[in-house]
Amino acid sequence: VEVGGRRYSHVVDPRTGWPADAVPSVTVAAADALTADAWATALSVLGPGGLSLLPDDGRTAALLVTGTPQWCEVHASPGMSSLLEEDVRPGCVAGL
Image 1 (cartoon, rainbow, N blue to C red):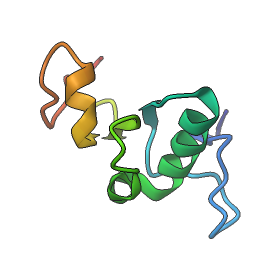
Image 2: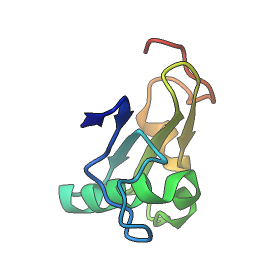
Image 3: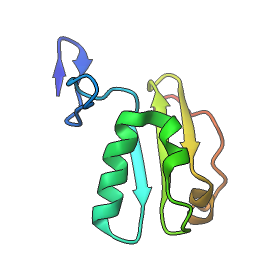
Image 4: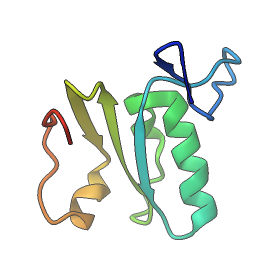
C-alpha cells in the first residue's frame, strides 16, 4: 500500500515491528511452495546478506532486486544462474 508517497510492504520486520523495506522484489525457486514462501519472506527482511543463509542443497535459489526504479541492483544466489536464460549481472534499466 502507498501512504503519503511512501510504499509499505505486507512483510513485517520482526526486529522493528515495521514493514520491511530493504528489498522491493524477491524471487525464490524451491522444491515446494512452503519453502519458497518462507525464504521469500525471510529474504525480504534480511536483504542480500541473507543469500548466504540459503541451504546449499541445489534445490533452493533466490534473486533479489534492491534500490529504486531509477537505480537498482540484482543479487542472486549461485544456483539461480542455472535457472535463467541469461547471466544475472548487477544493475537494472530504469522503467523495467
